[in-house]
Length: 120
Length: 227
Image (cartoon, each protein chain N blue to C red):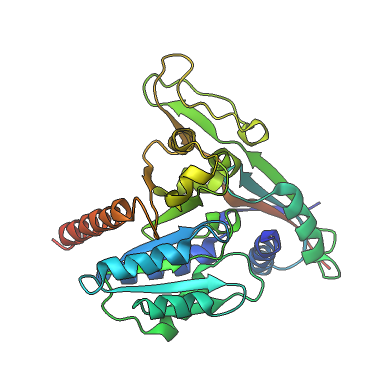
């Protein structure tokens, strides 16, 4: 749904950066998308193709790095792995000590870097 | 062959810039700004109508409300005594800081204690958009099923409050309050979990008390900040 808006914003920033760096063709942009960002990577990639189609950067590649959220025990520091949303299996208490868990990470929505091909 | 340039910025940096301006403005006026997020029909507008009736005229409130179409929500709020400005997204599934900024420029809300932003009915898309709020609130009605927090972890991990609505209907639905509370607390141990009914028991006392407590905190901070 809003992945099109996100893709458009990524492209806008990329285009600005390409111009600021002497122009050229956008070859690739790397982004980080967090598990809890409410952005779906497959939809974002699909939206990206639509955004660049027919334009000067038609073959620009969007590389999406998935960033999972982890749970961390507020008592003993025990950390769980990612991929919660597939299982929906968030832990209500720490499996080691029974303490309260907090969530770290997973909210990333970042542009990491981009690659420019010089010339037309 | 190509040149790689570091960007290292948030995709929503432009949204965040506008959100920051909104936040600064309401920090100066010590206005508490609350972004309400829920599925369509959870009772955002009804809760705000009841809030208007409970807290007017002691507190000055206003609302910016987002919908795809119709001005119905703004009309209802105005009829309940809360100044309201309707944003029409024309298909957009969430509010962003630009829409809220533009609305505030048109609305001319002056000297408001509490500004509500009633987001577009949607539990997903509004999640990552900072609107300059002090915090987000997630509403969930008892008719929506008690499995929702883990189904929508993005919003429930961010919301400062999880407000259960339509609690007067509990006798007629399968809705395990304890399970919902546990899931909400798992996603955010600090969440304020409250059970409300705008039209019956138990009323909205927990909600209005929460708002007043957050307002007092913000005012206390503002005083410290200006020292």
